[in-house]
Length: 266
Image 1 (cartoon, rainbow, N blue to C red):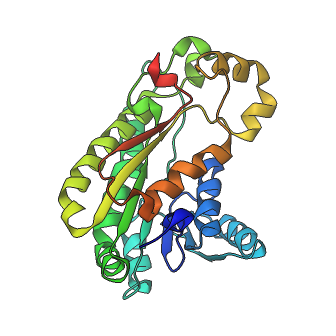
Image 2: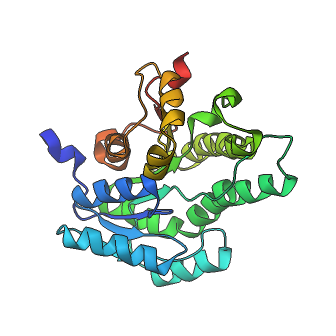
């Protein structure tokens, strides 16, 4: 039986994180590595993958590049072929691409793009890598899938805090993330008996460093929407990620951990 902080150890485990080179993705990749996992760093950009891999290696941890487009089933299958026979204990579905704008200015194709990269990609990835997840269960008696949703899967953006309709957090983003939460529950029910746990994390206001630097007035306005009266810092996604990835959450399945400073409590 693991004791104390050992229940948070990921030593001997392999973790794949999509969209790993982004703002929150980088922090999640780092905490997985710091906890002992071999991190497969995914992005569409080989260069960005290599930069993050080197950062992890320089810190004395283990990482490999896994550059492929998660919206392409062919590329997912090519990746899976390379991983044949290798257990993958943790998968974090974090990839996302999309613009801004409210319903009035958004095109219908934006919904399809957002849905494809958020939900269809997660489905294809998990379906294709099921043999690897099952090998992980054989080896460690546990596998964990973590889907990164959003507070906007549960509540609507306050459009009054944005400068214009073109800058608004878009309707297709929240709609796709809400679908991901439902898919999380479905997958948790389907695979729970196999000891493959499926959970979600819904981050709140975590604006990028660039936004924090270039739009201080927006950050001030955003902070007023949070009961804790501040935005989230990228380090604060690490704890929930490690908890769900590790055996510390061995009986947690089908849940959504909201990391929003209380935004959705209002």
